[in-house]
Length: 256
Image (cartoon, rainbow, N blue to C red; front, side):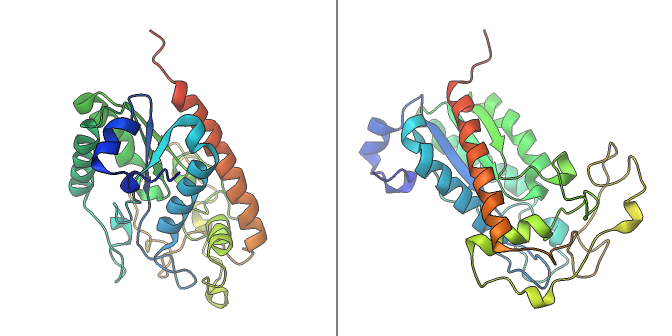
């Protein structure tokens, strides 16, 4: 049985999408990832991670998979020709309109699966807006929490492998064998931030940045040691964690 929302007929929506269901919206991006990766990286990771979760636990937790939202808030890469991006205002409007559409089904739980770090702050805001406007229980999950927002990165990357670095490149190599162009990979780590305690990626002080502020190639990290084998391990770990998160989301209440 398909668990893709789009495969349902109109009458089936009323029969099979229930208040207790979970609707899962993968959100990726189409944006530059340096000379060694294609624009599709975040879209691919979002789509494949969400699909794997639904394949494993979709029946157990009654999850319905929405089409992947591939164009999102990527304006930190707007300097690079080819990047497709929505403004913050447009992105919020898109999420609000999707929420308005889902509200007609009676579903109560909406999960955003985000594979693009640049969306993180806006999606956190969107969770509350969607809850307020439509009464959903809203959640945001990540295949890997971005290092700029509290996630981890490798020691060799000084904790700042946030875009096109070792882990992201490895996961893409696993998901799309042969599509990475590793002959173009090199080390792009902002060493000048390494001694900062606060003003750095993952530090206590947030700062505005564009992806080419550090290197002209727009990569922040070191993909030179990336491998499909590492990517398979990271992807499996991510999917396992996401499935565990879905279990808690399925039973979540506010404790009243």
